[in-house]
Amino acid sequence: MHGRVVLALVACAAGSFEHLHILPDNDALTELWFIGDLHGDVGCARQWVARSGLVAFDAAGPRWTGRAGSALVFLGDYVDKGVHSSDVLALVRSLVEAFPDRVAAIMGNHDLFLYLDATLDGSDPRRPMRMSVQAYPYSFFHPEEYAASPFTTKRDDDGEVLDALLESLLFVYETRATRKVLVPTPSAPAPAGRGRVSLFDVAPRFRDDGALAAKVAGRLDEWRVDYAAGLRDSGLVDFLRARPVVAIVGDALVVHGGLPPEYATDALPALVAELRATPWANLSTAAMRLAAEATQDRSFHREGGCAAAAAVLAATGAARIVVGHTPGDDVRELCGGAVLAADSSLSRPFRANGNYYCAVANHKPGGSCDTPEARCEGSVATLTRASADDPWPRHALRVAIDGGRTRAADDDDAPADGPGRARGLATAAAVGGLASWWLGAGREKPRHRASDDPSDDGPVAEEPAAPDAPPEDGDATT
Image (tube, rainbow, N blue to C red; front, side):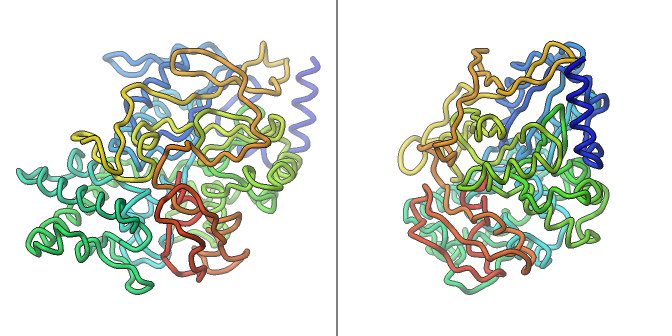
C-alpha cells in the first residue's frame, strides 16, 4: 500500500488544491495522455486522439476504447494559426461531453483571446492589449478560416477577397513590417499612433485600388462579426469560458502557460472556479490576473524556472507540472522531470510557417511561405502506472504519430523556443508581462527578447497600454 500512503501524504500537503481535480476518481487513474497545442489543425487533432488508443471515431460518434483508469488531457490553444479552429473546438467539446469522467480540456491563451473577441465590444478596454487581437497581421486568427467557416455567409467573390487579403499580408511579411501594420475593421478597431498603419493603406493592391480595399475591409468585418456570432450561437463560447486555466489530473498540475509561485495559494481554486462560471465583464481583478498569467507565463522555461516549479509543486502537493504554450519539435522534460513541456508544434500550418497567415487550401510555394507537410509531426506524452496503489513514474514517455515511444528528453540545458524553422515568432514578454500590461498594474512592465520573427529588430516600447505586439506569446504567441 506504499502508493496509497504517498497519495495520502500528497493530499494532506495539497489541502484545498483537491478542488482543482477536474476528473472524478483522480486517485484511481492509472494512464494519462497529454495532447499539446493543436492550433486549428483538426486533421492532426483526430489522428493524435486516435493514436492514444483511448478513443475510436465511428460513424455514430466517438467511442471510448481506453482501459479503466485512463484519461485524456488537452492542454489548450485549440484555435488560431491553422484554418479549422472551430472544428478543433467542436471535436474537443464532443469528447469532453461524451466522456466527462475521462477527458479534460484546459484554457489556452489563444482560446481566451477568441472568447473575449467573441463576447466583448471591439473597443472594450478590458480586451487584451486594449484591442481585438484579430487586428494583428499575424499570430492569431487565420483569414482563410472565415471563408470556409459554416458561421459566415458565402459569396461568389469570397475567393477574390481572400486572395487579395493573403497576398497583401504576404507583402507585410516580405517587407518585414509585421510590427508596423494592423488590419483594423469596425468590429476589430485598432488605436492610432505609435507608428502603426493600416494594411488597407499600405499594401500595393489596396493602395492602388481603393474600391478593392474597401471591399476587402468590408468583407473581413462581416466575416469577423458572423464568426463571433457563430461561436456564440453554437455554444462554443460557453464551452471556452468553462475551461479551467489550472487543473490537477493524476499527480500533475496542468496549466497551459505556467503558474508564478505567488499564485499557488489557497485562493487559487476559488479563482479558477470564478473564471469558469463568470462572464469576463463581471470578473474580479484577481481572476483576470490569474487568467493572464496561467495562459501566458513562460517562467518554467527560463533561468530560475526550476526553482519556480519546485515552489509551485511544494505549495500544491503535485509531483509535476504539465504545460503547453512554448513550442518545440517534440515533447520534452525540464528540471529533471518536474516540468513536462508538451507543446510539440502539432499544427502543420504552424510548423511550416509559424505565425504567418500563409495560404493553406491554395498554397503556392515560394516567397515567405513554406508548404505544410501532409503528415502529422511532433509527439504527445503519456504516463502509466501498474495500479492505483503504485506511484506514477518520474518520467513521461513521448509518443510519435507512428506509435514509437521514447522517454521525453530532459531539456534543462536547452531553451524551448520552438521549431527553428518556424516563422512569425516575434517577441515574447518576460514573466509577469501580460498581467501588468493588460491590467495596467501589478508586477513589472514587460521586457522583450529577440526571437525568430524577421521583423523583430530589438526591444519594443514598454508603456502598459501600448498595443505594440501581442504580449508574451503574441510574438511567440503559441
